[in-house]
Every structure is written in C-alpha cells, then in structure tokens.
Image (cartoon, rainbow, N blue to C red; front, top):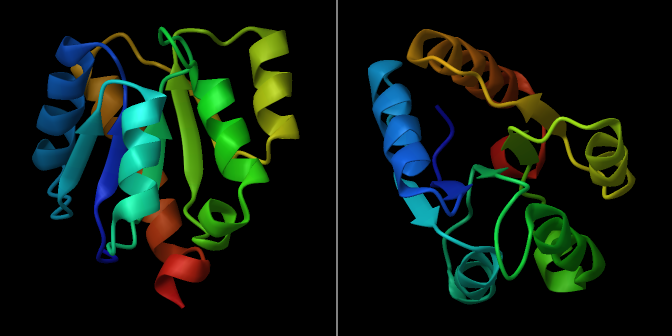
Length: 139
C-alpha cells in the first residue's frame, strides 16, 4: 500500500469506528487521521508535512459540509497541488449531491453501505484502485 495516511472526515464517531475496523480488517497498513469536520481537516492539510494517500469524506456534516470542504480544496492552489485523491462516501446519494461533487472534480462518490461486509468490500476495491492508479502520491 502506498505510504501516507488516509484522511477520514466524518462527524459521526460511530462511522469513524466502523471505518477503522473495516480498514484494519482488510489489512490496510496506512495510518488513519480522523476529523469530525471539514475545518479541522483543512487545518491539518494546511500544516502537515505528511502526504496523505487519500481523503474519504462524508457529505452531510454540520458547520461545513463535505461539498464545501472539497470546494475549498479545489480553489486553493496549495491544497490542490498536493494532488490527494478525494472520495465521498455518504448516505446522501441524491442526483444533486453527486452532480455537485463531480463539478468539484472528486475522484469518486459512493453511497455508504449499510453493513460491515459491504463496507469492507467497497473500501478494498477503492484502496486497490488507488494503489494501482498513477497519481501524485504514487509515481
């Protein structure tokens, strides 16, 4: 697996725990960085010397939703230059949300599965893809 932490932005602590359990169950060794909102994740991205492998974000969050979070990254030359793949995983799979996300150049939008086996399967496919895909973090 490509080095660098996986950034997970989700205000639901139960979902954070589910992601951690699923990622460990599929033997992904990367460190995990959890943030319960977009602003905290932005603070990390602006100040870290780490090169994150991937950002997984929810859409529905208070204060700053995931779309707003991605829009800030997209419009900021410094953050955009980091080239971090950005994927939404959300219960909000409305046509409007998906369209908005893709106008912000997300690399994926997935409806959040309802059981652990489906979550593990989705994450395994996602990480396998980004491990093979040539991008800033693994060239």
